Image 1 (cartoon, rainbow, N blue to C red):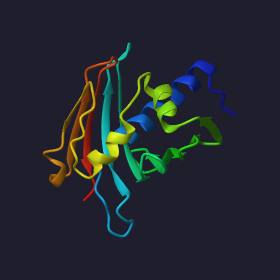
Image 2 (image 1 turned 120 degrees about the vertical axis):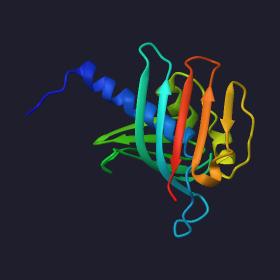
Image 3 (image 1 turned 60 degrees about the vertical axis):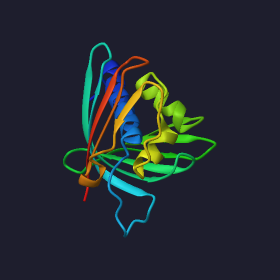
Image 4 (image 1 turned 135 degrees about the vertical axis):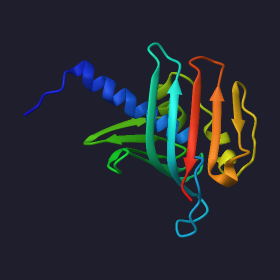
Length: 167
């Protein structure tokens, strides 16, 4: 049996949380008719200007809206890494046999990234509405071609998302 040191396990869990947050922000992916109008999937890369800097890449599936939804996070090989489900009352993050509960998806995102993230604006971005969010710059001009860029300069840490949408 392989025992993972606690500090290494905490690092893996933190990366999973950051990836879930990235997915929630970057849920901007293509809709597939068979899944309905509130379903998106794609791949993203995310760089976080923390100390030390962090970079992540993953596949994802997102369904729902800012009040209720589900997010699945996949490795580059398609293996499920983590999932989050949320309602207006709570959010649950599952990774392997571990499940963590939060008061909201916003709280989960704050724990993952150290900063509040624009969950409500995300769902506007998903449908191409350029909802402004203080500190965030979004480029929706490539959305029809399957690309979305979003970056945050303030507050720190800086965040840069690059999304390639499934077609």
